[in-house]
Length: 128
View 1 (cartoon, rainbow, N blue to C red):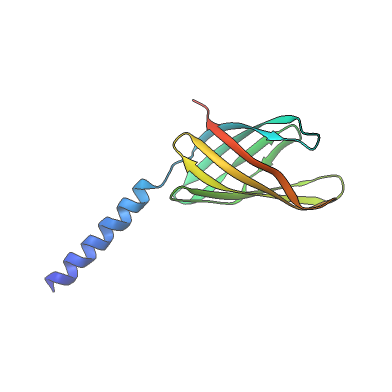
View 2 (spheres, rainbow, N blue to C red; view 1 turned 60 degrees about the horizontal axis):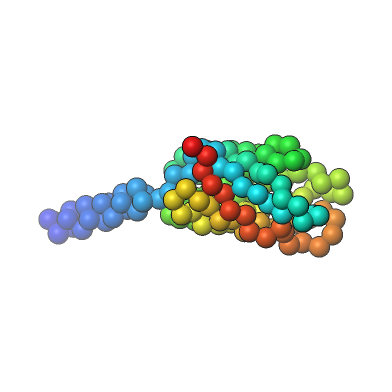
């Protein structure tokens, strides 16, 4: 019986350590994204993390959008935002990696007029 308890405690300790090592992105982050004309657009991300669940807002030239389907696991982050792009509903998927006070996001647009794709990667820095 003791070996089972010892193994169970070891597994619980390993899981707890893994959760403790997960990044906490709660707070304000800013970055520059390439616009359709190639000019940079200032973006502000306000993240709220609760365990692995991520909520918050993204604010840019077009206004504020709510983060949907957000998740943080270890050093990985992903979420979507949606808005009416004039030519139809557009969904923008963000997926990236967290390294300290920096997040590198790959941004991909889905729906709306024109071909898919996106503006390329965006680097966010934590605002202190």
